[in-house]
Image (cartoon, rainbow, N blue to C red; front, side):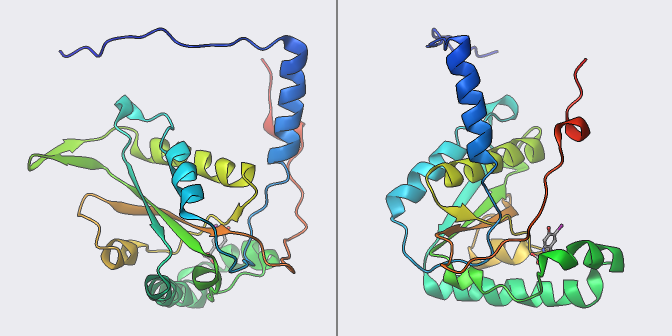
Amino acid sequence: MKQKPFIPYSYQEVDPDAMLQRAKNEFLHINTRRSIRDFSSKPVPKQIIHHLVMSASSAPSGAHKQPWTFCAVQDPKLKAQIRRAAEEEEYKNYHGRMSDTWLEDLAYLGTDWQKDFLEIAPWLIIIFKKPYDMIEGNKKKNYYVNESVGIAAGFLIQAIHRVGLVTLTHTPSPMNFLQKILKRPENEKAFLLLPVGYPAENALVPNLIRKPEPEVLFYY
Ligand code: IYR
């Protein structure tokens, strides 16, 4: 079996007080992140998108296969095409495909089948997962694909927030139209669509409350 060479890990220890301060600040900052549906059309330079996506692509993955592709779309014609296709699916979701309980659970978000943000946001980043790679015409299976791509998506959402932009985890369902519109190969399946940009000046978010520690954290 081929063994990759090991190299020393470069590590700088942080003293406990500074670490606690960092941990507090980390929470304070990430806790201000909100899913945004009202976007501004203010442009975001391509270089920003480059760094954000490369941050996401640094995520850990099963056997380090990095089983993902990111498509960053700014072409207005493509965005319009994506919006049309997404709204077609969402219309069916909101008019029969989603259960009554699901619709009730979403009611407070005020979402509906219309997805203006798909044209207004300057960038749409579509994450594709790769259940297998094609190597010289042969299928090579990847591992823990959903976990890996989910972690990369988390990295991306965090990076977007850190640099001062906003996003939304949009999951039009089914999403196979994205593979067709973006002409992606057979082994790439759309996983998540993230509009990325600035919030609209009058952007509103639901007044939601996050679960407190006793509901989410158990020490042993
Ligand atoms: N995909 C639909 C519906 C939707 C589903 C969930 I779960 C949400 O948290 C929000 C919306 C849509 O994007 O409207």
